[in-house]
Length: 177
Length: 223
Image (cartoon, rainbow over all chains, first blue to last red; front, side):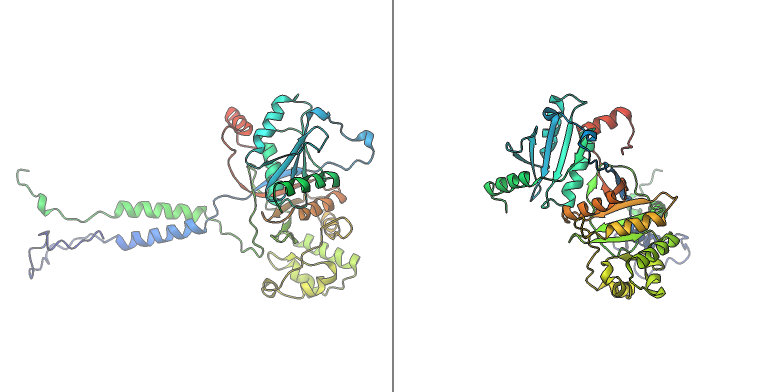
């Protein structure tokens, strides 16, 4: 590579048959060394784990049987996100699951931020209800979304059969099986 | 100076500088590298904006694979805790494990439990090489009625008494929610209210609240 044969172009060689002999250069050809260096670099780049896995902390609430001790939320300040099949999210505001709307993970941020803007900060609660069809990734992503959107209060709650039926009906209407 | 010697220039390139750079980079990567431990269970974790690195000490790791099967392992440094755990389970469930079978869990690096109590004896009978090719049933943890994770967490809690136990949940993207739910139920049953989810880091999306907050404070730490 670096040590190109320049005999044709009239380089430092006198010509064919003429040996230079006297002036032996002390130069070492470093090309193989560089080759080896870069080979090893590539190896280490590929094997290295630069990004350590991170951990997301979750705190579970204590199950409270007594309804008096349970947290009360204002109906108007609540948005419920239900995670359905094929990365879809079904959401409703307030306490009636009847007016179900569908969205996905790309657009859920706008919905949450919009609701947050319209609601008093101290009342705002997001309720997350993953269905059995939701994947682990969906669940973690939506919890992460809460961190991204700066939602202070959110809860993960088991879905009720009524709501699940609503989702089933909506999925059927939208052609998701 | 006057004579034009241009055509006589050699095409030799001085490789020394390049060599220097190459080896500088090489030494950096050698020092920065940390080999991935050979993982018996390959799991693709979801990403999150969390910037806290996952703890490595005193870890009780719950792995959920892509089929939703649940596995349990304890960090290799905690030999005493591992032994206490397997002994406790052995006694309380009357499994009748031999010392060799217990040692298979305690002493082998990256050993993990992936079978219900009823099959635990035949599961621990095998060494890790054999286990690699065996279809593992996983620990039943789907609902609260048949949730063996409750017993495992209790055993872990007893074994780690007085020390901080880091419960990590490492789940595969494709696994379904009920597996996670089962693990959460088991945690709640044991009053273990704190756990951590292993994720791969991503920066917060541009323009989001968290992004703005981080820009404003200049910090990167999020919980």
